[in-house]
Image (cartoon, rainbow, N blue to C red; front, side, top):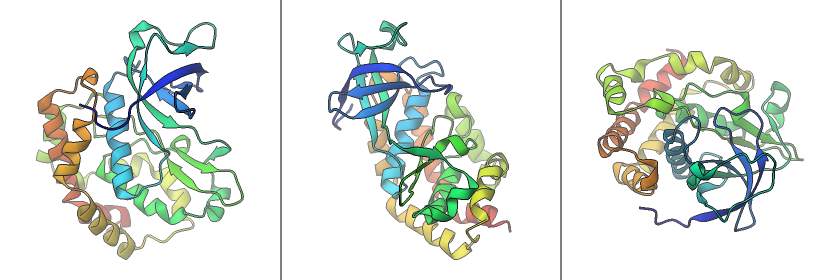
Length: 264
């Protein structure tokens, strides 16, 4: 049951790029220009769950991310492109992220000028918390203004099995002590190395953040985030319970994951 403010998608202007979730360029009834991932997504509705839970985690852990939330696409939504980029099958609750104008994807040259580049420590630790093997140049945005700021976006493929996770895969992860896995570092190595050229692998910083994450986040928070999900997205109760347990398990092993990041 959603208790947060829910918006309506007033207008859809077309598709955004070539993203695998086929996001839409849209405008809400609030007037905000947004990027929308619709209901009955080509990648499945679990990617909407992933995005929303990760957004709520980011806001709780003070990780830079554009404002986001849940909105409704309905018969009142006006499609301003031809041919239409959605159908009645997509009517329902969607995930939206506020569009940030004048941005560029991350590159080596811009990193020294990023005003909040130290937030990379938060992002790499967050990637390990959510088992994100899909951190790439396209999901780290930098504002191309006088004082560039870094934002993390696009968390559709997380929680180990990405868009097809369930209680069984999460339980297998816990049974196999997957907090020791190097898959996250190996898969994201190229983008991580961009930052390590300018930042030190400082264990004190990472361990301090690990403590902050454990102090800021708890089981009650996770229950609240999951209770905010629309019933229309159909996450089974047993899978929701397994996700809460999996995230707490990974949270409890933050120090071990810091050692993996540092390389010892």
